[in-house]
Image (cartoon, rainbow, N blue to C red; front, side, top):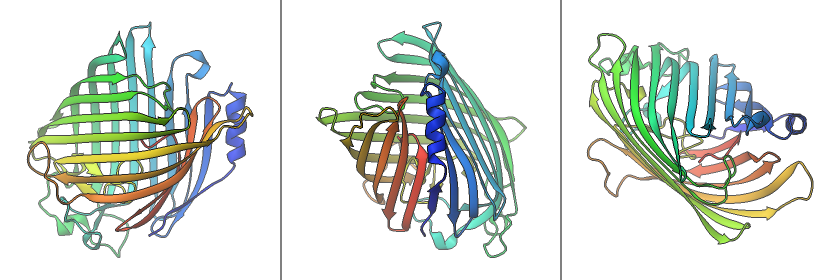
Length: 359
């Protein structure tokens, strides 16, 4: 299946960026897919807006066919009073027909089931900037999920196929975590040099009297390899997520698929207790205009591989899912990337248009 996303009024986005002293960029979007119908929305990013130190991005998108609305916002400031770090995330989904393909690497597109899926997640991380590019602290999050029967009469319902699956009607839980981060990249949104390492350990508890209780470990490492200074570099990423616990609902487990993980596979395509992901992406800066609108243009070709797993901390060598990606990035004034990805894999082709790099 090919998802086509068409960018509208891109020049309006560029003009807005200049008006806000090249710190804010807004990308209007129009999309059509054979599954979801017509969609409209916008993607915005801001970098050190007004010199305040706050950076962030936001997405709002709606599809018509099954009344699907997606909203996401992230805000971050690493130098509050020079020493304090604060980050806020909010993700809201109201999806009249969301797909679940089953758990594990052997799940199939042919055996997908549907559900009405509503989900609201909020998270705050606060920490101390120790200098030397090191930040550490604590976080708290809350997630409230509801599941009902989907709106598509042609696809089996989750309730009918998986009557005993944990969390089949949704749940509400809170999580507390400790985290640490090292980040010496040269730019926030459009880096070309440096390293990024993030690790966290979270403990979740249900908000109501339910058996749900789990721990989540996450490790994410990225490195920029300079081949030709300022012209050609390679970005590599390794990400591991592992969850332990009882009665863990499928929607809370680590997932692969979508614009920021395995780009050649549909969103939330693979689900299990753990996931491992490797991305390698050479980027060639083929043009640096002299004008004030664009900083640089890049071509990229990527290879993504990953899998989910049930037992152990690191999975074996088999059952990895590959995908290939090619695309174009333009970095506008203010250091905000506008990104186009064309992904090809065993289950079809996907196109993504969005702000910011996927990793």
